[in-house]
Image (cartoon, rainbow over all chains, first blue to last red; front, side, top):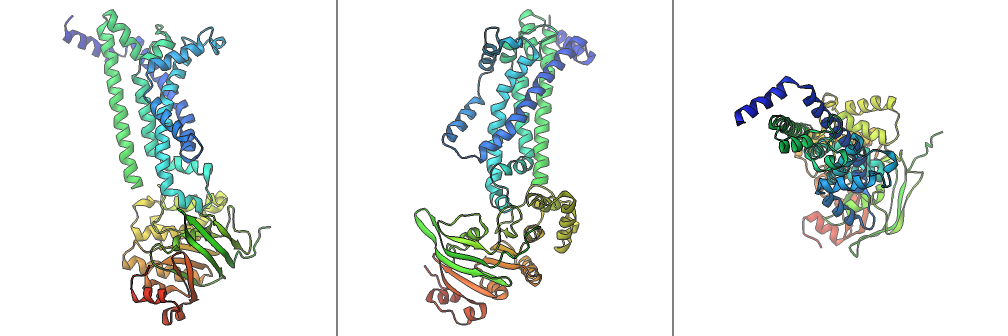
Length: 233
Length: 240
């Protein structure tokens, strides 16, 4: 099989909107977007609280969170696998090898990114806003909504960074999802499988979609920071 | 019923503030009655900003106490502060005022009205929907004052409000302050600009190394300063 034929077949898959192909892309997006949404709901307030709170061991927490940003996806997958496996503490829920398990694993990957970047953003904003916010009576945790809102452009970028990490990883979803055709098969796990099987057009087609997605994420992140700069000065 | 007794006079009873092992404010006692402009004067590092922060409640005295005639803490504390560098939220001009009103517990229905009244009062109506941080320095400080004014303070603290502004913007801010005093708002401000102190002050508090060494009516202070330090400061000499 020559490269030209592979590319042609890959394009045919992408442009032809093959149902099987679309199902894989759809599941990937569903899993990743849900994970980012959950990580955002937890991570934004938690990151802001960490920025404002002062407690013994805070530096240790910050260092650990920064380190967790580089957590290998397979390790996150293994961790969730142990939790959800039949003999694990959450085994009775029967979630292993379901999209829910994949979402849980990706939340673990994305959460440290969201918390760490939110903490940095909110801490910088707080040092600028502190006098005024305290003057109008917004002390401590009551300042969080203001700081999250005013950091919205930088925080959008933090969420996109989380989305980028989750959509590109393969290890975690492979371990806890099991790569079951039509059920837990995502773009990255399919690429892994099809490449080893030799079905290169499908792998390449999905690869192109992933690249396009990455490009789109970066364009949106760039746009967000540009709009932010224009609006926020 | 809301408590409508005045929070003034504000009194400081031997207030000290320690920082880095030094007394940055040293046993200051004073009373600020209602009305007029009181100017905190002194060289850099004399403790002017600290004094304003202690009065406004941003800092807690290490010793002594800050006492108001009526409750002046919590949401509607009836004193407000404007800082040296205007702190503008990353929102529109009107939203900046709305945010302060919301923080003070003003109901949504009244916020819009009060924000628009403040914008009108300070000539910012045309800027209402613009991002606050894109205003010029003078306009930003005007918005900071409008925002503080919208909270209906009895006493307004200003920490060197014009030190980063050009002469025209400075003059404009000074005119605004004169207008506020005419409205019955009491002003306690710091400056190291002697001309500004002469133009605005009814009373001068002269600080030197954290101590209040002169407290007199402005006309007396500028005509006949009582201390060597104040005389040197007025003459433009370096004092330590």
